[in-house]
Image (tube, rainbow, N blue to C red; front, side, top):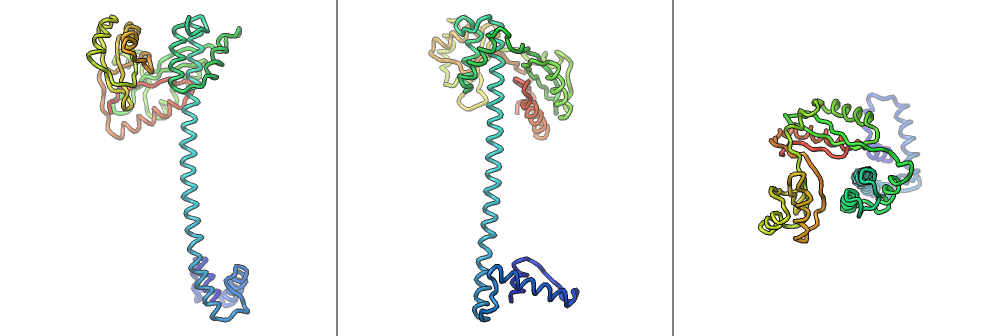
Length: 314
């Protein structure tokens, strides 16, 4: 009985016809010893109590198995949560780093660490706060740029590429090491079957526009009157990437006028900048779209990549 229970618990299936008597006896002795150690078999017990114990232990044996499976599933869930948290933390760290670079550039280009006197710096700080960049990070970046050594010199550059399904991409870079950035980005293109485009061959398919992102419903008539009053002759309002957000597109020279128009309506834009807007958006197949998104994900992991723009409509 103990030997049979041992085989059942161990999921072992033996064919006595194919094994020697000495081997089977050895297995039985081992089974009795192990079963005794585990509490399945007690030589002094009666057959009745042994039978009861075997049935009872056989029923209980299902519980640890379930517990092990539950623990495994909980382990997987924890791993998923940890991976998600890791990605979130990495994204936050990159955003903080990007704004650190932009603040240093703004201080150097504007010639002043004072956000009131340096309008460019003031705009960058507003954007940084909107993106939840800690105040300590902002202060450290300003101090670093203001020191006599001046810190690193950052420069902006653009890389163009042709992706899957006729899609095109513009990769905006902000780096203190252009050679390193170029090597990493081109290598990323190659690994994801994208083709490096000659300078200007992709850019001509896009318009350079000023963009102002707001998080509130816009009164179209009120915005029109305010824009005309502020001297903004031409603009376009489109839905943002997130629900409840809207993007106002204007000519780069009229960004300031549109900001004044919004201010007269007591609306503070959450983001102000310049962007490349595709003249001819393209819808890719699902397979090509997934491949292109893999390329974008890979590019976004590079520290020197600031922003990626594309012409995919889906």
